[in-house]
Length: 433
Image 1 (cartoon, rainbow, N blue to C red):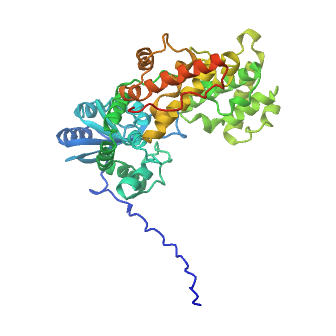
Image 2: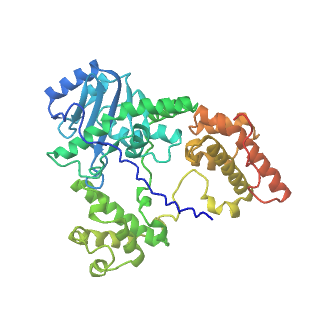
Image 3: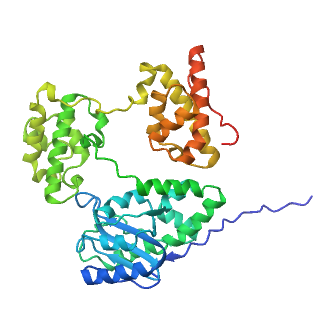
């Protein structure tokens, strides 16, 4: 009998991808005066092809989301690093790039701060959004560059304080490299989207991002306090509101991130404990840091203001709005609407799976909830299409989801009338969509 020796598999480590560590043309000087800006404007106006654009903010350090560095790169113009702190009006640069395709990664994060400087694209390619539509599993810039270009980007400076002056050279190198790869990434991604039959879908999404104004600020921004779900009574909500407003005013005055003055967790802890003296507040979780204790009297006054409010002025448990109630209460309030929502969600998820798309990119969740809560009458493809178009759905989305939504919600209504389990219908996508 012949014995076969045991074969031990050796795990072979994949070779590490090359690290992109220096800009191709070297690190350009920071543009911080009008003469240098004029030269950049002329160079970029004379350049060719798309322009890569990025912006760095000081999130977590400064108040608001304004830009503290703008990076650009275009064929024939090279790379430019512009200091908006020294040059707050970049409208001349924006005008020089009118009609040029801008390439950004996660454009909705940078477009508002660029608009504040006078820079607004007329044509856009968003490599993050395009990566989602292409079905990439990870869509951060570093991950997409690795997947599509076979390169590594150093990301160790992504969360630094970009309001620092002068900006250290390693930070500037990092910023320059972010735009170094964007146009190449755009070209590879466009080829992949075209091969998948999704390039037109992506173009519609990019146009939507470029042309849709940012949403108005929330009427009650304090309700975004992290951990607010743990606050139960209206009196406690009033304490949260007063503390949030006091912190926001102080952060604006000092031009610092609100969370550096007082973390959300401290606001929620104070609202739950309801301390009635500055001493009791000082002993509350989250008020032990130097920044929070230095303004202890301000926070104590805010707590006292919340406790002193008349009952009629206390905030409601739920924010005011024109939308449907939270889906968790639908079954009790309107079982038929709950059945429609379950069926509609299942149908849209099937579409997303079939096309390799994130479900939220197939149809905005809020539009789906509103449709399920108050569907048009009669429930037909034309009426559903019009209702979703009014909510901003793009043509490609309507083509994919309208037929399956009409079928799913119609079946849910039949099942509800017959006493069947809600959500059992509408799971299949008709052929050809």
